[in-house]
Length: 194
Image 1 (cartoon, rainbow, N blue to C red):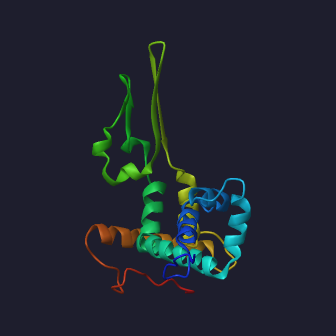
Image 2: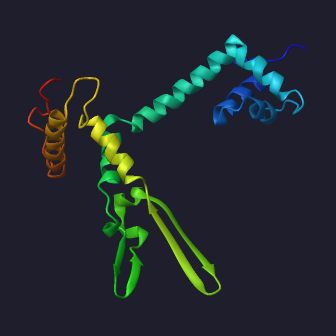
Image 3: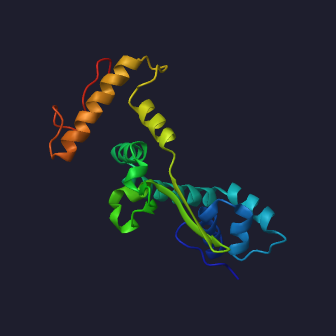
């Protein structure tokens, strides 16, 4: 009895393997979830991943995933996120003083909530402990600084050019907040040496 094939030239079980492989990139587990025996799953996975039609289907799945990611992961969005993380302040989230520490309600944080890495609360023997962590501010600033050319890099940019880029970036962010565009109308300022 011949097995019905889907339009990609895969059996339904092979197509399910591809779908499951794209979940976590674990071939053995994908084979098991696709219905292959746990005893033979590792060998089946190796065999499947070397078949041209299955490899092509996996690559097509990666391409679809990449298209979805690149819709959100634009340079502008990444720089905006790094800026939000890098210039976050604990004062945006926590108030402290003689009467103790108070977290601001999460509903009042708006876009700044993206900076929060962890909030947890534990109670033990009548004591309550709250843990509050922000994402890596220094790491975000370092990545942003590298993007802006603030470090001497192999591409020839200098610290001075980075400072100029940072100044232009700040002006662009200020203009964007005020509804303006940059001088060249495209949201990108030219830096000497570009």
